Length: 622
Image (cartoon, rainbow, N blue to C red):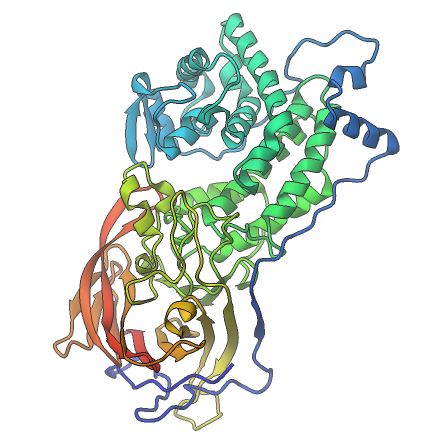
């Protein structure tokens, strides 16, 4: 790719500040030359995410026949005990549940309320019927029984039995048998069955033997339902959830070997179609990544309960999923706001990673998943350098190509709005599409249109199909002279996307350079003529920088800069080389699904369709 176009120096120098990169003021030239030894690392352009391929475990001829027969509908009892009597439904072992819940939600349950993304709903007012009118987050919690994790972690088991029994009885009364509606969708049914198996002591330890019989019968019915319709999930994560529940039932219910063999093959196939070669899920969502990790963590607990080792491929997949998630961890320990996710809290991330028992480091360059990470001193930069997920993988697909987030220590400096996946709690459903738009991300917007079309129900349309990427390590010139390296180092990432080429004949290219000490982020947004459309006339643009929660903004007198006072007491300066800077309102969704009022810096105006360059600088002062 070509060198970086010149940027006029918009920063005011301050005594004692780290030296800035050398800039040209009136001609196009590279910002800095990469050190020729070693050469810069080039990342190949990618048009689509690459699927991982995981083969089912090796089986004996007899086991292959058993698995095939079960898949064709032969009852498990006939395969395991042809001349014997069908065993009574029971659980074969007690699972030690991993600690994955949220204590606040569990405390609310004991007080008589569901707490979902900041919204409290009395248990007595919940419609547990399969077709009940619940928002998607409440459907997952109520019908997926994910509340069991929360209840289990908030108090000793004896103090939670009454609450668990109350909710369980209400749900069983409204759902006496498998049917239609949200309660019986593949993902919710899989989550529920897996939750019942993992948290069986919480559900079955009471003295109501009739209730115990109903629960065990429902487990078997749900497992049989999933055997038949597991492949009908809306996406691969839903399908993998159903397969994991089938495997858990095969491990913990009698005559389960045929079901387990059937489920393990299906689960590995579904995971292979869910996860890219670098371990990132194809929806590109941190929430989906977290869900996949937790799914395998619960399933591993089921294997341990029966003292059986999971297939090697499942262990490899579990280990593969964790490093990409850590790529999106900021300095405060929480996740970045990407593809509909809120800023998942540090406690939630730590709980998931701790329960997985996997110890690893974040990936710097997750090529298929599409996020670049730069850790420079106390600063962490996250940069979206891939197309949005394909429509068949998207859950809450966002037009976020070439957006970035920046944190410094525990403070988030530049963020994306996030939270579309949490709509239905405190985030209103009516703004879900807006939170997925390009303008809800810290990137350039052309003509007030999305770089990729945003559709209903979390889906996306046409737009960005290719992102080119070049990442290099730079050695900066300092006071000692050119090439001495005394100016320190920096990481330079250049990326471009074609989302606006078909409509406007313009490609968006963004260059980010972060100093190794984390004190300065220098950027440039370029509009480059491309395609066959005419390049005459003017077009509107806006470059948005959503600032983090607690950051106070003030505009400079010349309208070309702004000051940022961070919650930790540090002061940053933002300067723009072109265009007027304004301050507008925005919002940021935290990890609990609560929208927080924030502000955004906006560089906007009209520019020629023949191309333009917009340099800017974000620098820590003092």
